[in-house]
Image (cartoon, rainbow, N blue to C red; front, side, top):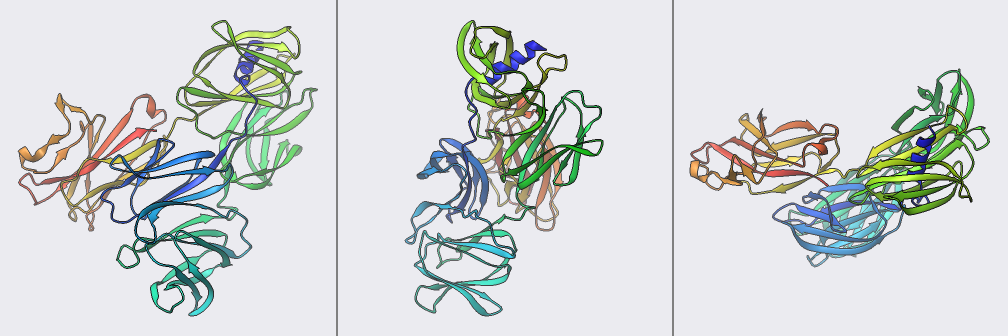
Length: 545
């Protein structure tokens, strides 16, 4: 068991723990008339693709300098360099300026609390239009006027929840530019309203993103670790007075989602509270809470905030937590016999964390400030894109001493993009542009004939099909302009509804990235427009990262 503590020490050693330095970002597509969906990339990494009036996010991104690119058919058409502050929420929109040129604007979102019974409205002028006066009316009576709002500026106000009408007038006149548009505002919700497109054409629209500020809408995730040996019964974990679960020594439960904000955590033994802690959980953050022994053997509770920032390619993340009845230690990290790093004075209840290249290491534990070897050397191997939370628990001088490890896969999500060219009027789409393993998603067909047969091809290769290079031109068999884009590893049949639409649901299994690099989806459907009697959509490519 002592060698296991050394393995934990290896993981811990590589640097002092750093707080997660991330911001949150929503991205909005407000440029009408582009011939294809656009890709959004941040610091060179593609986040997703989307179409006019689509909204993505909020998503977690690294704080600091951010180079944003909007790409059309792989070519950058818009770029912006911004700096994001940690812990702040932003919205970036690709839109038209007042004269019709494409541009990108960044807004800082107001995340301050909303008063009881109120809603928050942020009206953002991002359309090809002159300055406007915004009129907010309720039951036919004006309750608020926002004068002379210009592109690309915003006005933010909190109003009582309820039904309103919003109208835009040419600034300083009674000439109606748009509206009235109905706004149904719920309490504790922040509405970000974007005017997009050209106000003089039919592509002008309002995009509304609603962010729930209510306690039920703000959540954190938390894992719980039982690190107190010798208790005579399972411990009950109670969160804000509600029993959550029971667990035993060395058990790890979670991560589970709970409402964020002020939270009371209790540990009860046979119904009696033996430990409690009052903590504040921030929205969208991840935590671990451990009941453990202090250095002198007293029972206590410690809360750790997890680092959710992306892990670089070829790296693993390791956070080792000293939560055992043991003195301070120095940790020596070696690889192939050479010292890589020494971490001095790791004490209970502290953590050391670092991202390290994947591979094998040896760790040696010394009594703090001395060359006396306490444990080791001990081996430990790290896998790519995995975050390890390693806890030393129990009494280091007793048989109950052990190490428990929670491994969280940080592999990047699978991302969809649209490729190829359709030969008919129907389109293929997906319900989610980014997915994780075990997350259901739909692949949809729209614009086909009503109550007709359709087939979805799912392939694993878009380069070769039975020795034939892809794509395959189907014009030679009676479908001019049509192409087949993948090896069609398997097919699924469907029937369109009365509107000519069909949808099939899929779920990537756990550890899907271990056996598939990418997938390709393409629909074919009945048609009378060519001799073959079939037309084909373009296709979706699903790749990791």
